[in-house]
Image (cartoon, rainbow, N blue to C red):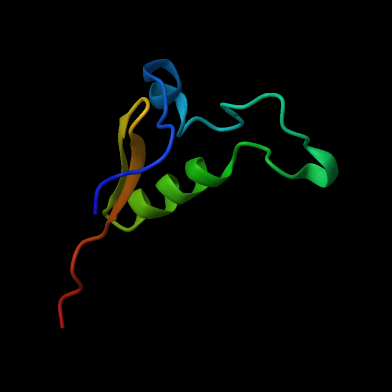
Length: 74
């Protein structure tokens, strides 16, 4: 499946996992929404379990986030 949508610019892509970073500052933050913590928390949890979240993006063509986690030994 190929990415679709506007994509994320190079400067934004380098910061998208930073705590409190929001690419679109014009969005309303009423009631604490859109605080810029979601991707930072997700990456922290993934790394705590030996995995990671990666961003693959092309401006004008879309973005894809990939979560990888190690297989569990049984």
